[in-house]
Image 1 (cartoon, rainbow, N blue to C red):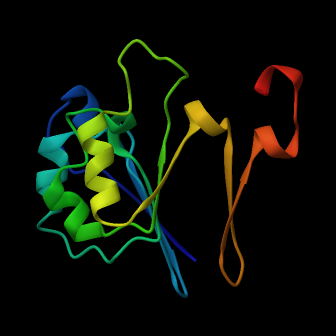
Image 2: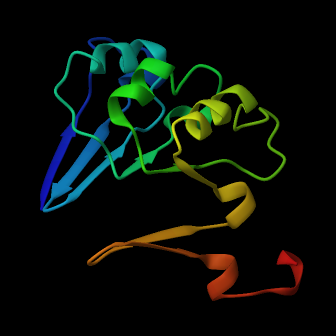
Length: 139
């Protein structure tokens, strides 16, 4: 497994200066994107990134992230959105979610599923905290 930690922003431009982590191994590519927005996504278009098996949806899948060009480059099989239930920002953005669906990416939202655990063995396996540890208030 290879772990590459990097940032694409040359400034301290808040969200766009987020660190990214690319995890790769035999038959596996994962990109953890932090809070990057359009500027960083555009900068990444010039990089030779492979198709991703898993992507953490940039900036909670707000309208300022997950551009069509970025998703076309990464073609993620699975995207995980880190968003709170009924959050005040209304993440994930409806139009951004349509972009993922248009590319046949499976999208999981922590607001709906709770904590998401991903395991990589012979294949990618996903487990949800709400299923592994049911509570009355999840139903």
